Amino acid sequence: MKKLIAANWKMNKTVKESISFVKEFEKIVNEKDVDIVICPAFTSLNVVANEIKNSSIKLGAQNMHFEDSGAYTGEISALMLKEIGCEYVILGHSERREIFNEDDFLINKKVIAALKNNLKPILCVGENMGQRKNGKTREIIQNQLKNCLGNIDKNQILKINVAYEPIWAISKGNPNHKAATAEDAEEGHKFIRSVVEKMFGKNISKNIRIIYGGSMKPENAKELLGMPNIDGGLVGNASLNAKNFAEIVQSAK
Ligand code: 13P
Image (spheres, rainbow, N blue to C red):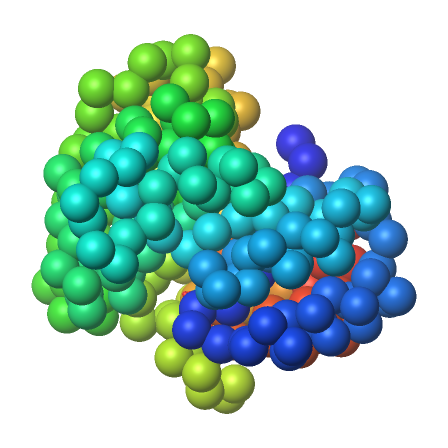
C-alpha cells in the first residue's frame, strides 16, 4: 500500500514561514511514490494551497467543526476546508482531546461531516502513559475506534486513515523525546487492524492505512516505517524543518 507521510505543524509557522518551508521542501523532494500531506495552521492553508498547486503534495487541516455553517464563533467547517483545497483533515488529535475536551462522540460527528464533504479524515487514537501502565492500552484504543467510527457507511471506511499516536511518545516540541519502539508501535498497529477487522471485515482491515505518530524523525523513520503494519507517519516536530521532513518522506519509499 502507498505510504502516507503527513506533517502536522500544530500551532507553528506564520504565513511567511509556511511559504518558505514549502519552497525549500519542493526543491529537495519530488516524490510520487509516497502520499505527502502538509497540515499547516488555518491561517496558512490558502498560501500553502497556492504554493503546492503544481506539485503532488496534498493539503490537510488540523481540525474542523461538524456543521457546514452557523453560529459557531471561531470555528471552521469542512465545506470551507474543501473549498480552499484541503483533501485531508486531522481529527481527534490527543491535544484536541486533552486540552479542548473533545470526546469520541464529537469526533465521530466530525468524521461523518468530513466524509460527507469529501475530505479524508486522519483519525487519531492512542493511550496515555497512565493508561498504558495500568494495562488499559487495548481497551482505550478499541473504545476510541468503536465510538469514533460508529454510524459510518462501510463504503466510506477506506477514505479514513487511522493514526496511532501513543500520547507518551509525542514530543511536545522536544526533539530528543523518545518515540515508541518499532516493536511497540507495530503491536499497536496490529491491534488497531484487528479491531477494524472485527468492525468492518478482513478486506477493509487489510487495506486501511494506519500511520504512526509520536517523535518520528529522520533517525527512527526507516525502522518504524519498515514494520509490516505501519503504513506511514504523522509527524509533528520533525516536520517543521524541510530537510528533516524530506528525509522522513524518503524513508517511506
Ligand atoms: P511529534 O512528532 O512532535 O511527536 O508530534 C506527533 C504528533 O502529535 C503528530 O500529530
